[in-house]
Length: 231
Image 1 (cartoon, helix red, strand yellow):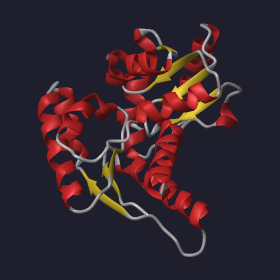
Image 2: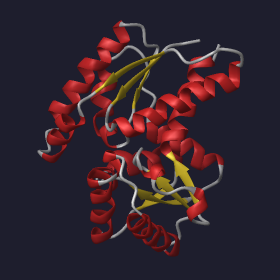
Image 3: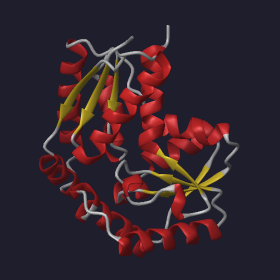
Image 4: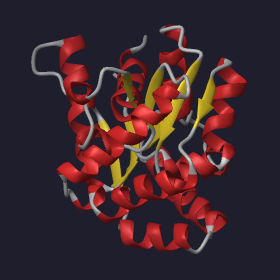
């Protein structure tokens, strides 16, 4: 079994989900007393969020790249960035490594393509929804059109993430607001919704809507499990 490196703490709420899902996946595949070999570095999210808000993406990339190299040197055979938004600096991180970075958008695109999805809606932080590092990657590599909500709804989605979900707060009113956004994307032709922030599945699950939801945390964790157990 290969060792998985994870950049976590962005937020720790979703990092705990990564840890659980990866270990459950290893147990499911290998049975017995098996659990995952994981090297985890957990950031202080307040420091990361301050860099995001200031638009200091190069500095963020340098920070993540430095820690990624440390995980590689410690024995990680692959790397996961345990958040969608920070994949904005994925190329910078991968350039610092000799091991593969398992990209969350690639894992998600593969899952969408396998289900023959041609058009998907995207929910995430403002950075993930508005910048092209995520949407364009899925469009270019998998031929899937990715649409996003209008500006006011994007702001609502973003604020719920930063003011509630990363703090572990789950509110019915926020779920209702998200479901309105999801319904609007469906009316625009989305065949599925990408939950493109690793905290969103804490708020919205398949029991809440008829449209197919693609939980990027679970998809990314499953990709890591497959890498770890591959011969």
